[in-house]
Length: 276
Image (cartoon, rainbow, N blue to C red; front, side):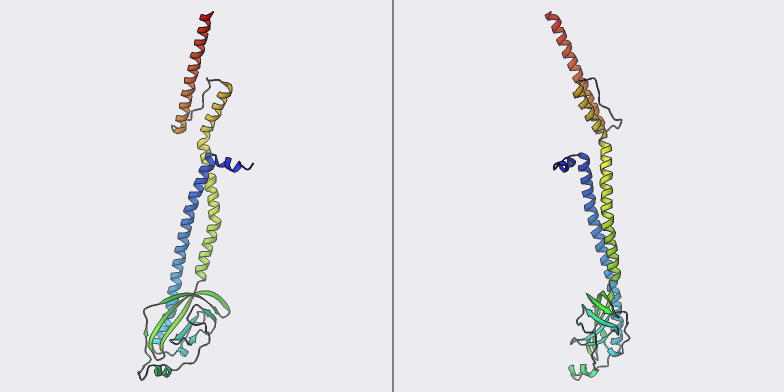
């Protein structure tokens, strides 16, 4: 009983079905991984663009001289404005918790323009700043108005403001990315096994049909051996393929054996007659 799996794998049909299933499985895994990576990359890029747009909108306001505490920040998006000393100067009103940025603070501290001016000596600052062309991205999480979620954060610096160098952090939710990737992964985990079962079953049935003439040849040869009737012939399929050629060759062999046995019988009969 313990050798039954080995006997099953000894079948050409089973081996062909197993080989086809393994090949398709490798192809599906590779294709599925490529799809998931591409999907995640594209959706992460969209989240980066949204976060960068939000950060630059705030940075542009700061660069034109708007004070951090006078910014009109989107309550639905986690936003922080941090100075070069790591102090939080502005944040979204409904921001309750945040991670993945330079500070986890959610309550801004008061800052005055002349605080930064003191740090830079007698440098006369008009409040105008320059928005950096570079954007840094990071993964994090935030709770806004009681709703916690994962975010993709963009960090944009604003240089030469009345408050020194400021960094704006703005987040874009990753719910769409996680939902799409999760849905695609679930579909693959359900669909791929079903497809592999279909491939294995179809391959097994097709192989069995293709090898049916071979089984007929085997059965007929077994019958010839049991009956010792060399006049019997195996069925020849009209397919003009390897199986048909095997059947013709087998019949030619049986005909040759029949002729040889017949000649031997005649020789024995003639010899017996002469001996009498």
